[in-house]
Structure formats: C-alpha cells, structure tokens
Image (cartoon, rainbow, N blue to C red; front, side, top):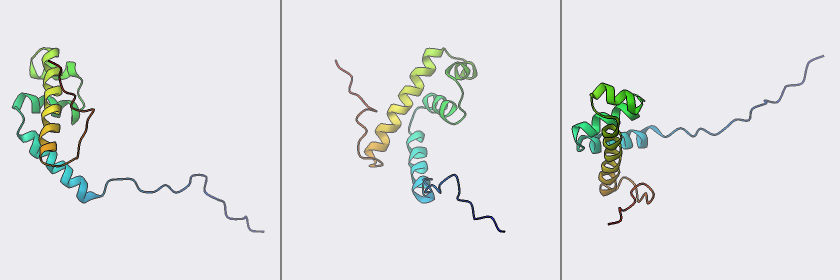
Length: 102
C-alpha cells in the first residue's frame, strides 16, 4: 500500500528579497551620497557598515580615538541621509534626523 503524500511542515513563504533593479538604484544613490562625505567619515562608515568592524577596531585601524570614530560614523550617517533626502531617494525619515535644540 502506498503512503499518502505528506504535507510540508513549513509553508511556502513569499519571496521578500528586494527586486534587483530597485536595490541597484538604492546602492547607486548610497554610493553617490558617500562620495560627497568627507574622506574620514566615509572610511569610518564603510568600515563599520560594510566590514562590520567595531568602533574600537576602526579606531585602531585609523589610529584615532574611539570617540572620534563614533562621531565620524554618526556624521557620515547624518550627511548621507540628508544628501539622499535632498535627491528624493526617500520621502522623510523623521526619527533619523532630529533637530538639535539651541
């Protein structure tokens, strides 16, 4: 006697990977924005986000204080968000750029 076909235990999930063209466009916009950021900021940003180094590892690699690395990464993020926002890459990210109170 033949066994009945088993039902899969895991349901088929929809493909949620980004479509390749929009992902390529976003990567290009990010590359353009990073090109406009100061060299030190860009280096720290890329080491942190692409190479996944810790702040301490970046400080050692760039031979600068830990606090400086944190500042550079933060400023790079801020500038990239601002540049990409001006280019209309995304509508608005209110939590990403909070105004500094004077």
